Length: 416
Image (cartoon, rainbow, N blue to C red):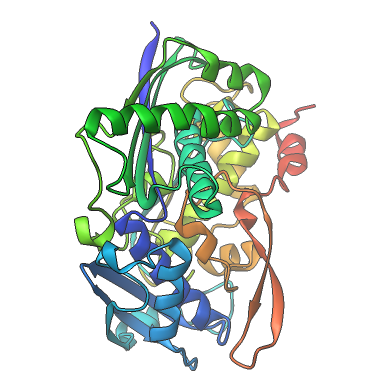
């Protein structure tokens, strides 16, 4: 039977995403100076105030005030009428030294013996419904907000847009899990109080979205998927509650780590519960989630199955995982049980934390770009970062999205 599935995304100006971006900016600034740093940085934002707290063990020094204000300004909170802006907001720091009890469970003489920074289970997921092996519902939700942010920052059209926004896409799938049609697109966007009453506002934003934004999203999709956006039966729900003038941290408080489903797979697959932003890679909540995505994506790309979920679990201070689980949802293209697939994966990928970090280059200051529009499905690239002495160095980003194990997997599973 066909079924409906929905995913949402939130913009970089959403309060929780503001908090995530600050936390990861702090992490990157510290890692740029001291790659061995241990960081657990949490951020709280509300009307006119940013509170940064957490535990850090590092030799690095950062100008927290300057860093936080730069992040807020880059997002677009630079007008006093927002009641949260880069120039005037208060900034409070409660950062302190990391517990030595935790650190002794992580630090080891060799990379191979490094222990997990915490217990827990982490999941990675991939599906072949899109070219980047992500669920289409989430991809479309992210794309809508990315393109809307680009329009806002260009200042050429839709000049009334403000930074805070959300999107949601509902698709109908066939009983074989193939995207069939877009049922509805929901967009709630903050805007200036200058575009008429609620009905006029909704009509204008919908018209502008269809004219300026949807064509940009279409260009980013392959033809068979972009055609869905031409369907005249799509229901557009624009700012369903009415006007949306008060937003951002003034409209709602924001906290690091509250958008874990937006950050991952939009509700597909599974989630272990741990957030990512502000955490150095010794925290397996982050590094192992990246590693399992890397595994799942390469397995699907190699043709092992149409969709795959990978789970790994750890005990704090221990290097070897306590469990590895794989679910192909009955879509396996090889004559093996999921348990047999899991056994082969264990031989192909070393999931000890130290080796994950080494394999994916996670001691680098590469995390700020992950704090908006999802940690997965992104294009690997390079970023240039300056250290405290102003020396710039290039680092690889989104290494967990590389398809660098496809050949090895095909050989192991005897696939052509």
